[in-house]
Image (cartoon, rainbow, N blue to C red):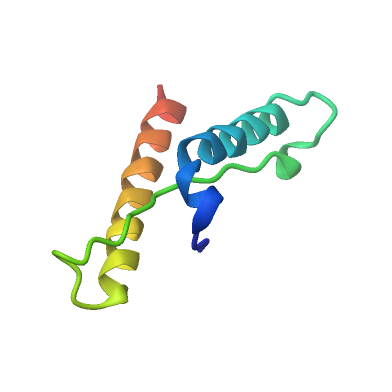
Length: 79
């Protein structure tokens, strides 16, 4: 889990893109053994005081988004 604020929060799309770029670079590196090629699924949620009664709800929504991403990654690997 990562909690972003300030400038990081304002640049979440760029941070995610850079994270994914680095993961892809590692996956495509022919010098790495299979077990050193990692993958990760990202899901995030933004606190919304109009719907959140507790911070745990934000984590739950982020977790749900992460599992959607994992499912999409699995479909891509199977095809």
